[in-house]
Image 1: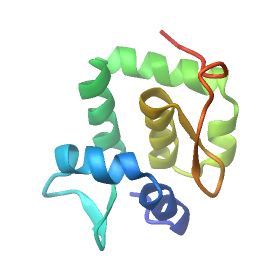
Image 2 (image 1 turned 180 degrees about the vertical axis):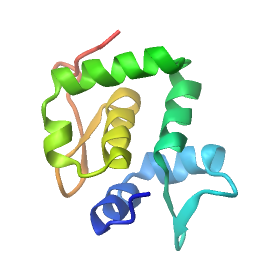
Image 3 (image 1 turned 135 degrees about the horizontal axis):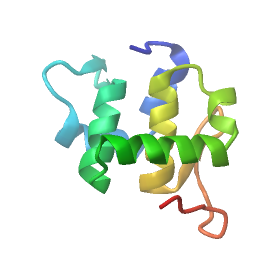
Image 4 (image 1 turned 135 degrees about the vertical axis):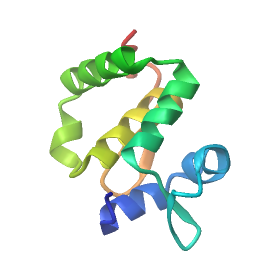
Length: 114
């Protein structure tokens, strides 16, 4: 479980995660620092499964395509939670992490992977 300052900042600054997804997907075993939800990798994968109806094979396929198309995730993220959160934010909310905040990806630059 990623408890780094970077992951805390990524989660804290993600309004969609805290306001929309946490009330639905956070469970009794979820990790919180104060009222900031820090989703574990399996929780993020559950969100992807529920939101996009990805089965395990499809989720791995999308993950591999995404990593291949965008070389930035592994270079800028230090844990699997950070990478999976970046994938979720890209696919669900068209946003990417700058190192400081989430910014919207212009639809003209967003690449569908299906």
